[in-house]
Image (tube, rainbow, N blue to C red; front, side, top):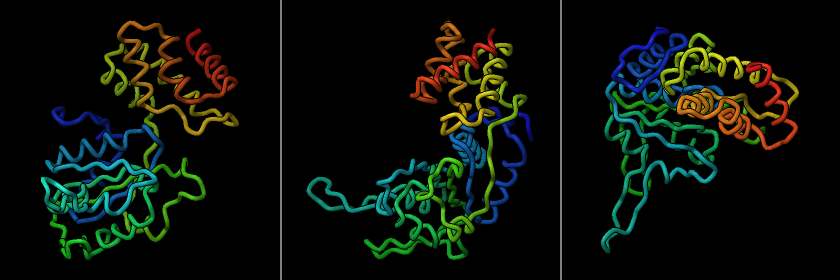
Length: 264
């Protein structure tokens, strides 16, 4: 499972048995919750699995203002007429596709009320505005993600919601997995990609520093892409890793010192 399979699909390098868990959940109509830090591959994993299962994918980036109406749909004025327009969740239910709610804990509280009937044996979506009650077909799957380490005390996923999902815990890949990913996505050679991964490991292991999160695989790929296109290593690391991670001068300098240890 750890090797790349289905090379015609969106690239994803499995770390464990997450692909099998996803397929089993889908086959049995179970909602799935992905937990892990930002940039560790959760979204790419969902894209890979949607293509692998040949299912439409509707991705929603959740935020503070996201309401139930944004997911279900609303009446809009078109050509002088008021027409109903489905939201992404409704389209996924009608099509029998995957609705992926990225960082679901960021959404407004009324969103979870809508999700609950879809996450138990009812598998129903009630559209109050139109009077419809949709029964989710077998191919439909609800997938959500969140970062439990980043959310503050006011933004935690309620146990009553969390326990409605099958869950997979994600973390940053091991160097043996992450280095080939960085190489493939950026075109950088193994030696320089491996050095970036070692730097990421050092940053992620830091404690007592004012960093909300460790460096993501996504940022490593950004840095590697810039290096592969001819940018100096120190400048690429500054632009793609140090600056995105912190605005604090002391923290930035500590990260530069750490990079200097890796690169000499």
